[in-house]
Length: 116
Image (tube, rainbow, N blue to C red; front, side, top):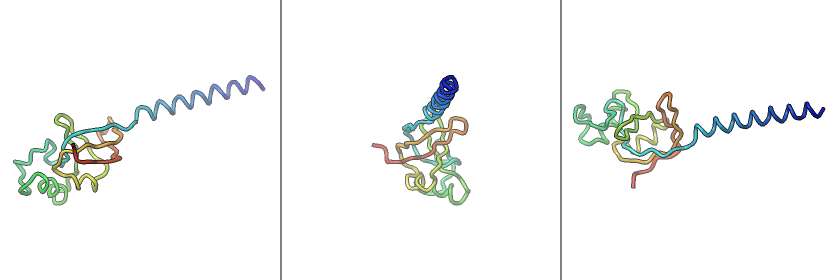
């Protein structure tokens, strides 16, 4: 019985450590950049001119052309899970808090706020 108990405890500890490692790799991070659309993913709307401002162009690209809002940090482009919240900040510099799926480059958005 004692050896069964020890084996179970080792198994339980292994499961807990594996779970902790999985959650540690998917912790919340903070990202800064500009919310734009995937048609003008580097936030340069000069070629599209779907509106008179970057905000109106990004919204038009998303609504008219079926684009998605993305975050451009100056180097990388990240897909954003919360398109409604992203629309509120289209064309603006923001801070996004969320969990990054590095395989799909998608941020599971927890919050979006105007950059300070």
